[in-house]
Amino acid sequence: MKRFLNTLFVTTQGAYLRKDGETVAVKVDNEIKLRLPIITLSGIVCFGNVGQGPVSGNVLLRKEQYRVSENEKLSAPIVRSILAGKLSNSKTVLQRALRDHADKINADPVRSAVERLDSALLQIEAEASVDALRGIEGDSAHCYFSAFDELITSQKGDFFLKLRSRRPPLDRVNALLSFVYTLLYHDTRAALEAVGLDPAVGFLHSDRPGRLSLALDLMEELRPFFADRLVLSLINLKQIEGRDFQTMDSGAVLMKDDARKKVISTYQKRKQDVIFHPYLNERMHIGILFQVQAILLARFIRGDIDGYPPFLWR
Image 1 (cartoon, rainbow, N blue to C red):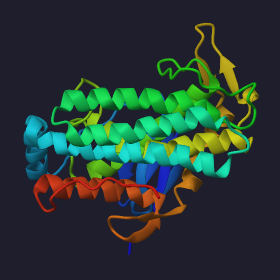
Image 2 (cartoon, helix red, strand yellow):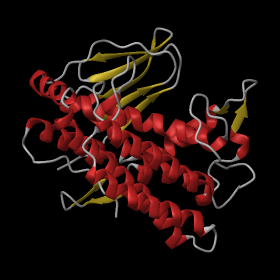
Image 3 (cartoon, helix red, strand yellow):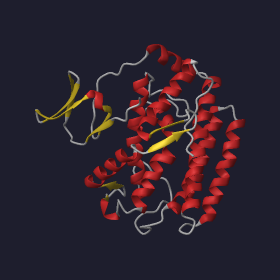
């Protein structure tokens, strides 16, 4: 039986975590503030300046992962599958908006984006070059986010997305997206490490010092249906408001601490939602899905299955 486990979020700067027997102990100012059984945790997310010890993994699996990553003929099918999942799920997010909120949104740009994503799905099937696939991914992301603003149906004066901005986010929607993507990034990293893969060596995202490229790869198919819809719910249901943000002198827009905690809580609750996995023909909690996809990726790299099956949201 699969179990949905909790994630420990550490937001206090200067906190020190260590393994103590079968528990994780959190110490602040030389005083233990929290102790949790390891068996109840799926991951730990730390904010601020973070240092960590070395991570071990499955050496044979990682050697095969590195071999595949260096061979475009072997890595292109993985990239193609990742993009098929991302584009399909992005399209479904837009189609759901057309179906459920047709009276609240400007449908034309959303329909146009759906058509362009359909074309991109056909394009990736014909491409063998990883660089060409990356180009299609970039164009498709721009297309998707060009329609994203139409999916915001309330608080339009405070929340809007004209252009995707990351470092730093320049509006409230970008700030929300970046923060939720950070949470998802930590979850995919934990899932990959748990199955023995190296989260730093990806296929779609090229290797770069300090970047966990495979964690970013695994995020791609999960972002639209999970992270993006969570952001839209927070805004449209008015769980997050304009006053929850502050604008810095540099123009960067940041969430206040209370808002971050609210988003983390909602993120954790959403992971308890149940979805259907078409490939496995099984229902499961979203919180388990990250590890399921990591396992499927590891199985493909080992040669146990013929292709990597992305999660396709229906």
